Image 1: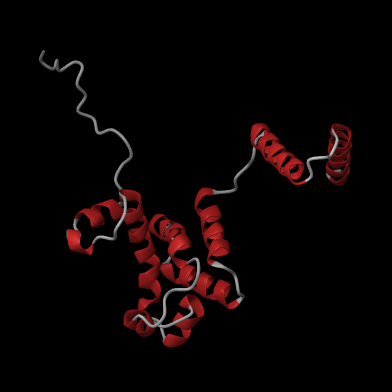
Image 2: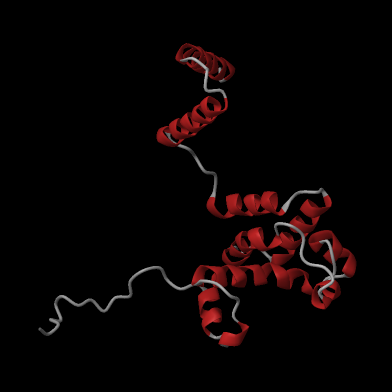
Length: 179
């Protein structure tokens, strides 16, 4: 059976490749981070953030990383908790925004000086990049059911009447405070 030109599309399909994907393709295999493609792409986004502070003063590096680049290179210290997990999100913002990297850098330095975690900083940049999230009825229902089920596991002798009364009380509190 031969392919008919009418049924075979020559259009590219799927997501367009990001700049990080292109850069990843140009890195020799021995220098690639271990893991799946998504892990490798995330490491490329982390590099965006790493490069912002790589040549900063030792004082700034201590504020942001909790150590200096010399200590990291020697192996005596490592990045602080959350760095590897949350910097890809910040890198995505840097890669997609038209904002200058200096503003992002100053924002990160200020946040770390105020004691914010990498999770909080990444959430801030994710909100800037994607906008505010809104929930829906089914997600809220599922969250409430999980909470009630967890409570019932912890306190199995709780009667259905008590659970029903508690739900009524919560509904009254939520709708009275919303006015």
